[in-house]
Length: 146
Image 1 (cartoon, rainbow, N blue to C red):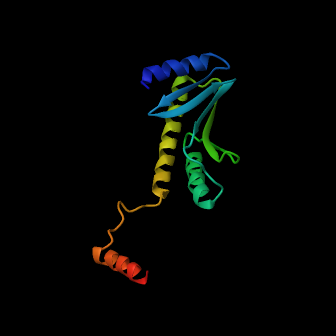
Image 2: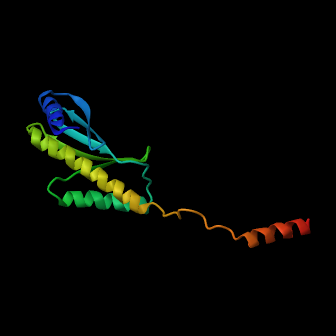
Image 3: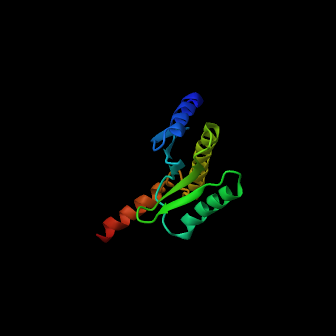
């Protein structure tokens, strides 16, 4: 989404109480709701179980966010095994603050996608070919043992 288009949408949301809409930043869907403040959230991709190997990087991401200038909370739905990054802004937040928050959420989601990519098990590009002599030997033994 172009910066001026994002600015126009977020400015309209900032001025209209009770507004809810979805905006896209670098392919990231972010929902913004205005109800006496701004509730911004972005869903993290994939299902996230309660196992340590899945939760540990997510908690490190949230912890790193809390140490930064723009802390983001983590919401987790255990029934659906989905996680969202959320940020609440006061009603008096200006549009530039809202834009910075939306862009930060997009960056945090991109960081999480990178974490998922690093966790994915590496699979060889192709299976090693079975040597022809081994394959024929097994076939021959099978025919002989009948």
